Image (cartoon, rainbow, N blue to C red; front, side, top):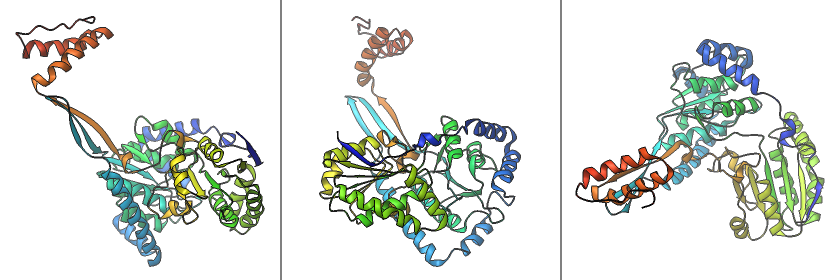
Length: 435
């Protein structure tokens, strides 16, 4: 496959890997042993915050009063879109039953998890949308208790807009605590919270490592790395729009890869020429992030044709995948590895990140090869059940006994034998492994 790299990344996500494991293990161990007191000590150390951790109804109302009405309307708009999309997703899974053989019925039952912990980043940026994406989907799934956790700012607390978003989306409790200590509080059931059955939401490398370590004790949505975005563009694409979209995603962080794949070298060169100016026009912190991300992690690749473009994109398995090219239906049918797909210039990753309705908690670092993003389904356990008449169970019992003996599992075989003997005392069965 011909891939011409006009720009090649000098770093990858693994280049920036730092050993945070031991630090996170110690924090989790200290908090599990020390409970609320230890969590508060870490909050004072890392969050530089000594205010109320579990927000009261009065504090929530006071924060809501600080949110401008226009922003409230925008948050409600985004919440409504996410809610309705989640309700549609939920409708695709239902309780069912099926008669496997006459008289033997097996079924599927969908049960939401009981308690959810939603981590909402609030450090460099106030991730209002993360509160909407995580809390709303848990609420639609039918979870009984939802805790929203977000880092407070020193002397200020959790951003009022995050509090408003978490509140209207259905959070039962909101805690002002960030990082590993916040994750620990939800996992271990501190501050009179129920222990979380699942932890969801993006976070920094310490939050991601905490979720990795705790996975098994609790469920998690995924282990997220730096956000990444890829654009597929042909000669019909607008270079200025493409460049703007790349820069918009590079501002996430210094190590957030952005990639452009095209079959038109002139477009690629035009985009590359535009990006530095667009980055320089950003506010300071955004400019710093985008500059480093573009310099160290970005790639621009020219392929011979659209099939090679699609194959290259599937190899990257991006978190966000945008197509600005002709014949969008072809791309929708052909592409297989991505967290979320944005078809055509008329939509953009920013829409999905904030207000369109699809979820923005998505697989990173190539994980889209094997999983999708956060959805209402992540909170729902699909369990099975069975019921049978005695006649209906007869052929299942016979097969079970013989298969079990072939495997050497005599105890399993006898669980079938005893039923056949009880229900059909006058019948003979050949239940040997070689029968």
